[in-house]
Amino acid sequence: MSTFDDRYGQDATQAIPTPGGRRHSGEPPSHPLNDYDAEEVEPESETRWHGGLDLGLLILRVAVGGTALLHGLYRFGVFNGPGIDGVADGLAELGFTQQTTLLAWLLTAGEVGGGGLLIVGMFTPVAAAAILAITAVAVFVNRAIGYFPVVQEDGAQLPGYAFPLMTGAAALALLFTGPGRVAIDVATTWRRKPVPFGIVGVLLAAGAAVAVLVLAR
Image (cartoon, rainbow, N blue to C red; front, side, top):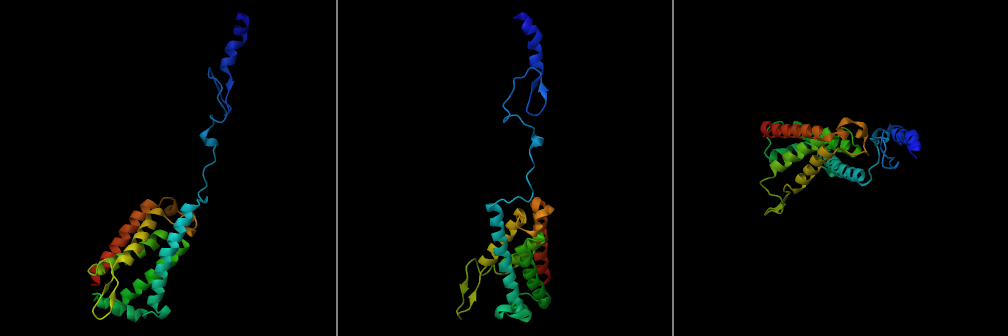
């Protein structure tokens, strides 16, 4: 018995194979499902479909972008809208006194451009920042009316800031979530790491809103 142990016992403990192809001295064999190399696992594809998450972001993008796009087209005169001159007159009634025609063009182009880009998921941080800036200005201008609409004595209805507040909040959310994988931006850095670009987008939106309120009122 001692002869068998001397001949085979030491060798048996020094060369125990493992599923990774290595041999560990003095260690009992482990189950192949519990012992594997991390590098042997294929990395997750950056464009893999994530079901509900990507679908939800697509719905949010289309809702916010579509709303902004239709508003911009309406201001341009589509759907019996007021046109640029009418938008400029409306801005003057809201207290804007400087370059109202230019501001009307910027407002309309920002809604159409930002909304269209959000729908397809292209340059998402810039598009969401543009919509956030526009809605931030709208909330500020309508803050005296209140959250809910107000009906005046002559029957005219003042809209309140509920609608621009919710639209701006959705645009703000998209700045930090990114567009999702159902988007043209799927392979971009701002889709994979949206938080830094979201912070930059918030700063740009805040700067644009403050500039408009300071320079045009």
